[in-house]
Image (cartoon, rainbow, N blue to C red; front, top):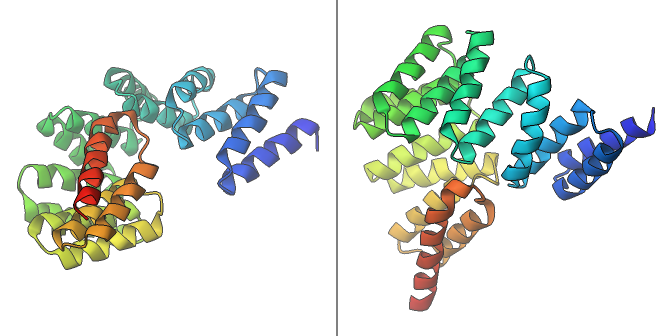
Length: 261
């Protein structure tokens, strides 16, 4: 095994162990020696995304995704980073390119729907989700997204069916548990909401918005200390630039709750 392969293996192992900063340092050293190594660039882009350094990540991913247009995983990574950086037009272009190369890529169609959803173009979003489900009725991603549209448009019963069907397909998907937690929280069933929220964070301990909802559930039950801890866990994990406003609101809420105690 060459020195390059050894270093790449060390970086992969560091990522698996959660030592992302270590992986980034290894990969950056490798890139100085192997400037055109696409494997190194792809892994470095992944690592930078994982620690929230999205501006750095997008530069790396633009380069390597441009070199490897047939590698759909890279294209998705680039589109998702554009989305996180609030660059919807760029994200749309990436997802549309994926679909032009392979119309069967239902995740790209759902991702286009997500952009419409966040721009509050709900009819367009729903159209994308339903088209994706026509292609792949077992897509939990499409079902959860369609459920979100139904939930946003006050079709609660249909939303619940979508969430439950998605969870039947992928019972260990933390997003499915979280969506049901949100549904039950909105319905006023705090016990069910708490159950699904706790399951979400058990499956994914870094699921930031599950901690936020859990904090609200605790607060509604007058469990102030528990709610503050959950809100702190949210702030610790939520690094998206798009969440700056809500993070500021949560920080202010924590300060107020601690001032009352």
